[in-house]
Image (spheres, helix red, strand yellow):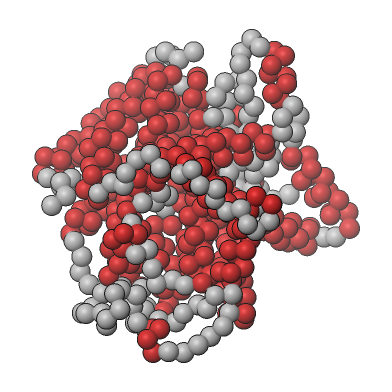
Length: 358
Length: 122
């Protein structure tokens, strides 16, 4: 009903009537880049506001409420403040790597952000190995963080970066295996294919127990992957000042901040797309009129709504669990989540091969 | 009409360039409008106030390195499992027995690392 590819092909046809194809493609690419940039920045600003408000609510505070109605313009104000702060040049840093690190972090989150499906045909990068591409590009971020910590020439940043590297690398395995479980269930790696396979029923309902286990593990690993919640020891402020980005100032720091919030959205967006049907509305077999009403809600609203709901859960973790120690963190991954995940994969495959699912 | 692969790759490059442009443009604007002051103390490492001791780009705990090696092993094997996962429905029970051998070796690797004490944080 809301097929966005009709709109894009119409724009393409329209451009082709007045100009050669190479120019049309260039203009479209620039337009896509600008849209991506705008959505990326606005979403990050929204997330900063959202997190501060949610945290405030958990702690019985008001949160930002001075700038604009309900403090809505607070994150804009913060952004401008960050823009006019001095970018300090340090004496003993590795200049090249120090400057390179924010590029890598933003690149990783921008590429994985572009894979997320916002609606039918409303997706920028649609590879037939989409979800695999997403895992691949999101691991570039680890490199950026390690470089940031190493090149800063500071003990705090080095410890923070190594902790973060060990943590992200370990939990990436769990993310990979959870995704693998769902790929086996869906039978495709294409993001569009995975979403379309959930038209009648979301995977969390149709996938039996293995899908639920995979979801829980994905959520835990996703929280660790974004360095948040109980797993925020790379930037444990009581011991490491600010972790790997201690030496970054002004907008340089701003990019790490931006990527961190966007990664929260990406992790919850991927969870929404793998387990909660992406942009597919809630369908209950048999309830025809209910399904029709649900189908009237635009897919973008469904996708963003699911992603924000999942982000809320991840933010909730932060105020519920105390921070872990590094050995506890690695034990949790390697001695619990990984064996459970491997077992879960076998379970899922048995369910698929012997047709035990409904 | 170009092929779908080229189309998608073009879009991926567009997204990558957007990311690079975001950082480059932002930093350029920030350099233009942000104040600048020079002070030798400013270039010091932000540690505790007194000049930092020794080199900070130093050797570090070998434990991190062990986990990185283990990660490499498991991640590569996960990559090998992906093509099979896509086709698991068509392969059926035969595919299951075939992959069971591979999977057993993968699990044995984890068991070996565990028994060897590679997973213990010392």
